[in-house]
Length: 551
RNA sequence: GCCCCAGUAGCUCAGUGGAUAGAGCAUCGGACUUCUAAUCCGAGGGUCGCAGGUUCAAAUCCUGCCUGGGGUACCA
Image (cartoon, rainbow, N blue to C red; front, side, top):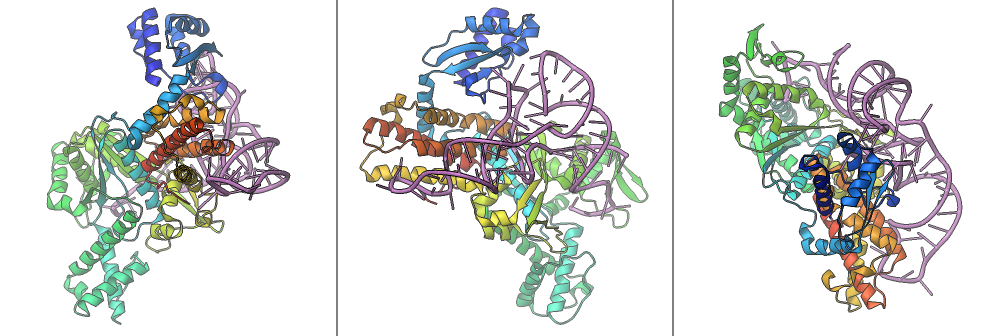
C-alpha cells in the first residue's frame, strides 16, 4: 500500500516537475492524530523551495495530478502548512488481512538484505566467571539484532570472541590453584586481584576429584596447564549453558589463542612496522594511533614481558573478520569498551581494511536495583548477581523482554523486586496474555463446531467498527516496523510495537464478541483475531519471546 | 582536562525534522452470569535539563553550559 502511494506521488511529481525531482525519497508516515488521515506526506513542504512555490499551493497542484483507485485511496486532501493526507479505502484493510494470512509465519519478513552475509559479535565475556546481568542485556540485544537481520533477508553468523589468553586467564589459573591447595589443607597465597567467587572453589574441587593431591607443587614446577584447561573448559560450558537457557546459540566461538597460533598477531605487528604505524619507545612497541585520529598513541607490546596488550589481538581478530568476506560486521560492546573500539578501528584503518563495513553498537550498562538500592558489582570480588540467578527468578521471556524495552543507548534500571514479583508491571505478560486470549477464542470456536474459513472466503467488509479498523491498520505495520528496527539497529522498537498491538487488541476484545450467532460476522472476526495471533507470534519471535497458548 | 551516552508526567520510559508530545506504573473513580479481569473504561498529572542557533517547521539537528553514568592503563 505504501508502495502504491509512493509510486503515485512519484508519477505525479515527475509529470509536473521532471524525473529528477521525483527521484528523491518520498516521506510517508502514519499520523498519530486520526484527523490527519491514515497516511501523510510532507513531500510538498520539502519540495516547495526547489520549485519556488508556496508549500500549500504546491500540495494542491500535486493532489490535482494524482490518480488513485477510489477503492484503495478514498480521500486525499491538503492540510496544515502543506501536508498531503490520505484516507485509505476499504480495499486496503481487506488486503492487509489477506496478506497476513497468506504469509503466515513469514509475515513481516522481507528480502531487503538480498542474502548479504552479516556477522554479529556479542557477549564475548571473558571465561573468568559466570555471566552477569549486563552480559544478559548484550546477549539479548545481539540475538535480537541477529534475528532482525534474518527476518530482513540477510544470512547471519553469531560469533563469540573467547578471551582464553592473556593476563586474565593467568589470574584465573592461579586463583584455581590457590583454592586447590586450600582444599587439600595446604594453604597457598591467593593472588592479588584474584577471582574470589565460590565457582573457583567448585573448579578446584573438580580437579581434586580427578587428580587428588598429585598436582601439589604444580605452580613451582610451572605445570599449571591442567588448572588452566579445566577452568577454561568448565567456565565455557557454564557460559554456554546460561546462553542456552535464553535460547541463544552461537555459530562460532573464536578463540583468542588461535590468533597467536596462526601467527595473525605477529603479522599485524609486521604490517604496522612496514607501514610506519608502529614504533619502539621505552622498550615497548607503540601503535601510532595519533596518525588515525586518536588523541594518543597506544602500547601494543609491553616492555616488561614482551606480551601484547589486549588491543593487539583485538585488531588481529577484526582483521580476520574482514578477510572472511562478510558484507556487514556488527560489534556489540558495553559502554566500557568505547575507547577500545576506537583503537581497533584506527588499527584496521592502518591495515587498510574497509571499516565502513563495520558497525559498532555501544550499549549502556544495567543498573541493578534491589530493595530500593543500587547493587554495586565487581567480578573479582564476586559481588554480583548472575544471569543464571536472574533466569531462575523470572525466566527467559521476562529477561529478554525487559532488556529490549529500552533503547540500548539508555541506561537500564533493572529493579529485581519488580522483575521477581511477576506482577502486571511486567509488560511481557500483557502481550503474552493477548496471544493466549486469542488462542482461547479460537479453541472456543472449535468447540462450538465452527470451522474457521480462509479470509478470502469471508466478508471482511463487516470489520468496520473503530476498534477493528484500528487493529487492522496496526497489524499492517509489522513489515515496516521490522525493517526499520533492523535498518536502525534498534530492536527495542519491536517491544514497543507488540505492546501497542496488545493494547489495541484488548479493547477490541472487550467491546466485541467474536463468537456469536451471527455466522458471517463470526467468520470475519475470526479472520481478524487470527491475523492478530500471527502478528503477535511473529513479533514476539523476532525478539525471541514465546507466544503461549495459555497463561 | 579530553572522549562517549543519557536528561521527556511523581517513578520507569516511548517518540523516523512535522500538525494538539504519548504509554505503563503509581493516585482517584467505575466494569467480571460472557470467547481468560494477568483485562477494560474514565480522571488528574508537562518550562521535553538550561541558553542560543539552523528553517516553512526542533523533544528530535548544531554550539555552549548544568546534572548523572561510562571511559581516558605497558588490566580485559
